[in-house]
Image 1 (cartoon, one colour):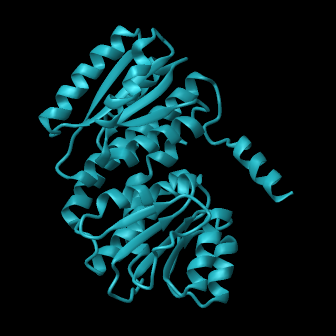
Image 2: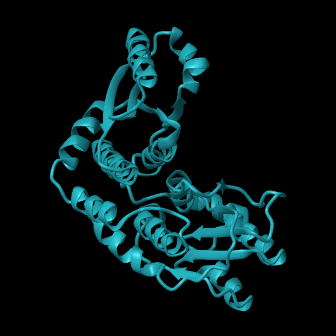
Length: 318
């Protein structure tokens, strides 16, 4: 798994090529991303990166009723067999919406082929779906760049690739994993990094086989903070905070840390650094993935194994 995670820079390069030949019919006034689990997270990341177009993420069986002919539907399913995503895709076909599928194959490709859907992005097989994020996101970045739906420069991407190759991520991840042993990780961040906090949670769930939760500042200060009125030493709280965050948020982080520590919990604050939002997002995702695997190592469990998810899927089919 560590080897797969460290292939992210190569994935980014290959992903950029995968979206080159996708042609969209304009105008588009809204983008809907559909997907579940590891195939749903790319939509969350893109939703945060798109600045000049409304976008929505659907992790469910149905498209919203307001979707219309100017809505682009993007369906992510690594296996191609995700039933919720297939349901959304069928609805999009029935209503003749413009769609893109991103997959390795499976039922969704068969349905797309039968319906003569031209916009299919085929990504490589052989890795866990959650670790295909480089293919998923950067294939769509190319599509959106080509149609002026997103503004991310080549220099940003090149800088990101070089940053991910720098040493130090593993050492930082190992140190944090050591602190997280026998703790429940709770991640706090701001709205613009919600996708990152969700990714950390999912990585702890699937790779470390650990419960984990996240919430958003400043909202958690208006409700969840009350949970720290009780002394509880089971949690380790991780703040993922942009180094250039507003001073109001910085003050809230400091005050929240004090309250959380007084309740007996350990706290780590990680500054998200970089010259662009894209770089901050993906370096944070990279660090979280590594941390979850080093935590799995502490627990002597296989980060690749997801048998409970597979059991549930089999029972749903029976």
